Image 1 (cartoon, rainbow, N blue to C red):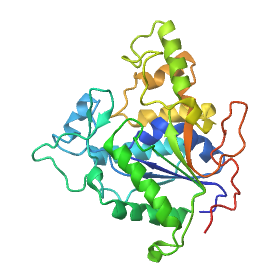
Image 2: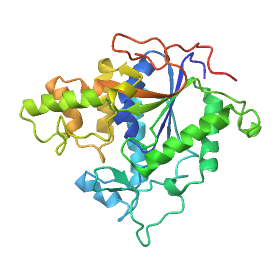
Image 3: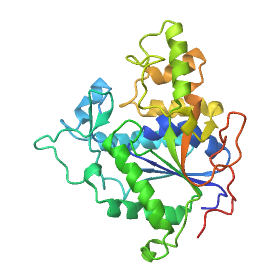
Length: 311
């Protein structure tokens, strides 16, 4: 890894990276920074939105994971990311599935007879999974890592597990006495949790409703509760990737089994609204760097000595 700035992202399934951090990834690649993506599962339990590919679903041919592997590769090509790995190697961990709770967030799916998989990521041994990531951290030596908050953004068990694995691995990677066979120790300087700005979400919803759009984010209103959004006072960084919005959208389109071409992700591009071009983050580890007039960092590497973390 020869780039001065090195970013590691830990996501649960293919498409998560493009939805939450695609603009940031595209921007940093364009700026010559090293971007490494680790995806924990292949999204085998995802819903298939393309009728002619429905046979790939877990309850039919169960070939969706391999297909989404190809979608992810295409998405990474759109963003310019050349370093992508599956945690422990492709197929080590399987998508655990989920269901929706009445409160509007995800929870673990009910066990289905004949469909329980021993390698479901939700059931993974935490130390084993973390050690797979320790190997990557010690190789890549990132100054910054991005993953989910403890709730996984919206409660998906694999997002929650990715959070646990990433946070644990960051600690273990820095410990000199932990598994020297996995590489030289490395301490990540800053760890961020991806976030959705509550203020921006309310602003966007208000504009959509005033324009007569009642379909986008149906069931949510500008003044309703937003458990999946983060109060703005908890945000630490806002990365402006609006110049790379088309790259983000191209990556989203690559995930065609999961994201509809005419879905709400693309409303912003059609209306000129740049909601998806700015990505927000909470700081979990490290010290806040210089901030702008909005009180937020505009760069995840703000305040970091580019000689890197501490070995």
